[in-house]
Length: 535
Image (cartoon, rainbow, N blue to C red; front, top):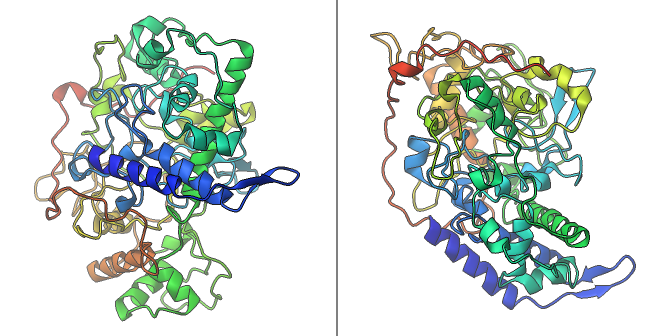
């Protein structure tokens, strides 16, 4: 995977070097000519630069490669631990990396008082609200660099520091202004930016979730962390902050481009009248917007006919649908006990313990965020809604859910925030039978005579606020298969080749049957819920 990242990075360098330079012109000044291409290429370079991590070994694309629709690029991880290791390889995240594709279209997070629901934001828990940069997608790019379990920088200024030494610094300053990286760096900056966030030298983690998990475990709370260990003067700190914002905006430009979100699927050709769905694809589409009720959340711009005697008479959409409602839902997924985060209960070499609470942690999704436990909630008015959204995760676009490398159609993927589901067939079967085949057990403990994910669904990790529009759809096995076939029409690369989709170099193995191991005895029984601290 690192080799693949480096290949794309060098490809972007070559594209930049042959790009005719744009000309700054007009009021307000605009990069005329190739300004768009320059900004998108800068974003592509940033996305694939492994220097943008504390150990110079993890790029954004390390968790988001094009041939999977910009999500996890390692089949064995999708099959097993689901979450990805960070720059400190002994630290792992708590969720599956979310796809980039079409994420740029999510609006700023807002609460709709009429519908009593949140819409917009980015990340599974919507904690990237867009409140500052007016783009949730751009602000999403600012979280992984300083997450102790991801890129691991202890200070946002480390991004500007590494950019100031980057080979493509001239491109960054062309786009964002000459001298924008002229910062007087203290002599110890390299040492600080090579030491991971959460290290004892910085008095522990700045992460609110980490402090909460410490309290849950009964351990002594960590001392207050050093928020900005790189000792910059006021003007230089302002430049570093601007550089961090421009890093995010550049990545947003790349992800909004045809490199990532091109609307080039069979379905887009179908809407344009240049492709006719096959009989199975059409039947799957009819089920998707009918009996399967999929488009009540993954909006296709059409009406939904839920009963056999109903006919959908709505017109085709005027634009390209995004197959999301921009909202969030608790689908009642079981806990995935193989995610390494549950087992990261001991201090590492830097005296940082990612999850001191172990299986005491329940992933409340947006409920964690609104309580300031997984990111910072910038709107105090929202805290009151936290109990109503416990367990809710963002409704991602269904576009590119079926994308695999062209040279490996059996590439193993994982689905939902915790990767519990390992195929689109399992995903549709879950939506169809969650409540019909429910059992009050944890994963790995289905009753004798049942098969987990086939005739047994373990109980939800978060039992509150479960979306009841699915779970008992009455689809036949063949109808499930037809919906899976339709989902394949949402894969980009049909009308034009998908950029860098051919970069997968790993082995192509048949998809594996997955039997999750039972959790350790010390982890059972699981807590029925998480009681947040007083707010």
